Amino acid sequence: MNGPATRHDAAPPAGSAGLIDGAADPADEAASLRREVETLRRALAERDAFLAGVAHELRNPMTPILGQVERLLGAAERDAPEGRVAQGLAQLRWLVERYVRRATTLLDVSRVQAGQLALLAAPVPLAEVAAEVVDALAPMAAHAGSTVSVTVPEDLVLSCERLALDQILDNLVTNAIKYGDGGAIAVSGVREAGAARIRVSDRGVGIPLADQARIFERFERAVADPGTAPVGFGVGLWLVRRLAEAMGGTVAVESRPGEGATFTVTLPLHQ
Image (tube, rainbow, N blue to C red; front, top):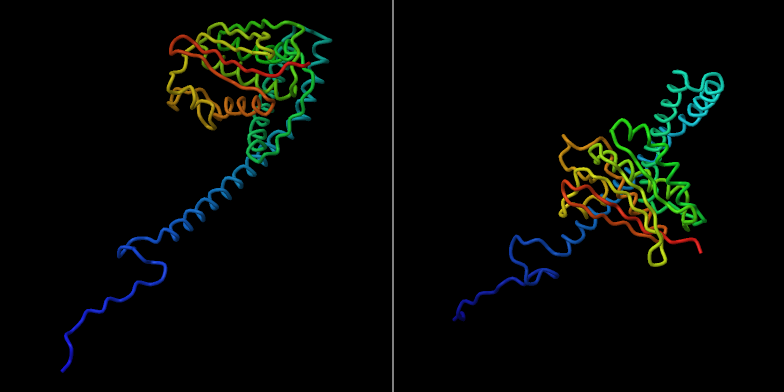
């Protein structure tokens, strides 16, 4: 006589113990996530390489154009310093220089992302660089109805890369002009706690507290609404932060909506 019927459950396949029917294998999910992350990394690397190539192609042809404009401007200023030709060429030179700076910003962004932005510290007089930047941006400030004052001791010398400092100040003053609502802008520099503190202040729209960390990220702007935000890449403040940190410094902002904003960059002093 046959024994009582018994139930024989099939043994689960190896590696699937404890899995519920239809549930995904954690190991498969992890492998899939790793593949997706790697795909995204390759896409970002390709995008940054593309940006670098575009920036290079946009900037390089402008170098001989700028040289020609400067040559013609020099001749016009010798013949008629106050004439319309000289004034027009001066404006054209400023426009070309702004174009080159924007292309350089794109190139710097791609270099930062690729870890290829090497900064060499040297003695740099802050007053000299600040005056150069403010002078270059004078047409933009005048168009916005803003005045820009510079208060920096002549003997305040930083330990940094001059081009990087120029880029930092250019971005901060440009930002102040864009969002300054036509008000006065102040650039100052002081010694504090063994370092140099550079401040760029405006009296414009201000930045809500909730947005003050966000604006230092890539592709973010102080005004989130694309319909009201000034034209730009949204990388200026991100680049300021990365350049300052690369030179052993920091950047911070103090602001209230409707009361303007003050950006403070701290950089090492030249010993």
